[in-house]
Image 1: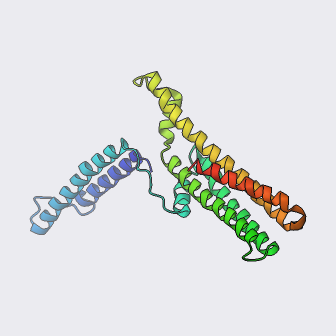
Image 2 (image 1 turned 90 degrees about the vertical axis):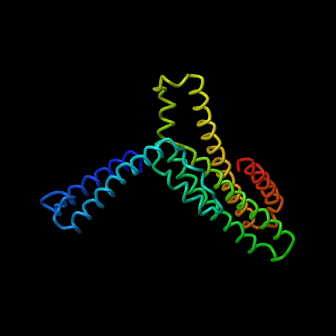
Image 3 (image 1 turned 45 degrees about the horizontal axis):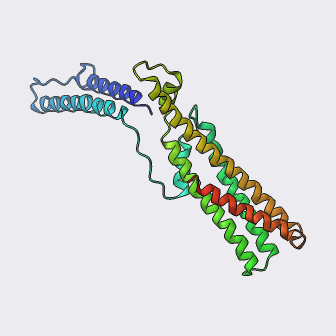
Length: 241
């Protein structure tokens, strides 16, 4: 929720509280009330509303100029939760939705590939262990790549990006605005390239599954070549971590 919306809601709540406490139609509290309890309660309510008015608004105004911290991401699940917050972004919403859907497809492709390995190759054999190790390494790197995407998205601000693109702030020198916009665009390109590599990984995983499943003995060379390609893609994905 935007800081100014929170400020509006806070002030409306304070006004509503003041009406409730001091209006004749409600509690009708007065500091000079003959009842010591009512007078004391009136003063306490006033102090509380005043503190909320000054402190709450000051805190919200101060937070408006702060960049939110980059979250500490220790698992793909945490990364997914961060990315989901950007589903409705005007500029990166589509990238965020694609990244989440893509990870689920990657996991499905990897599970299919490992199932094909288990069915066609002897358990514990060097070939089976080699295939499973490459698939596991690819999925580990894909999870790290998802955390990288989440961190890059967490640094993206729709309002700031819109301002930089519109060039509406005449107080910022053009060369500085251009460099700031370049940083945003470079970040977006990095995310797009990560997503493109993930998509290629899905294709290679699915192709590997088909080669293994379709008479492995006749397609062993093709499967080995695909395994090498997946290893190369894994190394390339590590660059985008």
